[in-house]
Length: 254
Image (cartoon, rainbow, N blue to C red; front, side):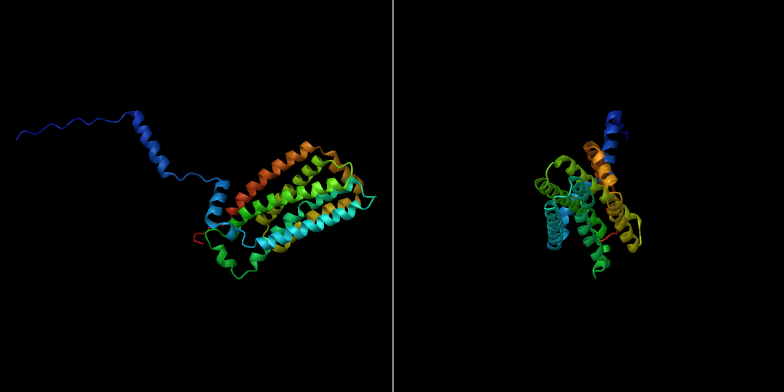
């Protein structure tokens, strides 16, 4: 029996081989997810009601803190001896207060909750939820601080609005970076409270002991430097939040 000759096999071109390799690699590798994409996905999966389930307490804390600061501004404005330099110092020292208030409320209370251990083994644990919530807190506090600065500009004469806004934003994000560094690096809760207290105690002490020098230092720095500081600290803050959500990565489901 006569054997049939096999048809010659046509080999693919080099271009075709490279295209197929690239296609296999693209399908096999999971694309790296950005931090903002991760937050959007987490928010889409959980929803507003779960991420901000305690929104009434947060709103109450922010409203109460804002009203107290507004009353303090009003009381200061009625005192003719108060200089605008004092207001600038108060803005720099007081801008992180609202952020500290809601952040402490979020971090301290869950650890004393009966469901804390359960939440820590969920797909999105306390720290991963914190990466989204802390970003939201900082933006909300930034808006509220800006509103307080606008109120101060209406109460005091010869008030440099742009300078005060830049001063407030830089103070908020600078403190936010320090706050997250303490949360991520310090294990002892007591030491965390001490270090956070040192931030405010040091600025209040400098204002009390070296009032003129402290206020001159704040005013000597130009607006452009404060804006640059805000941008740099904002970038470091986002980086720290990304580290916060990677702090633990347990498997599980909500």
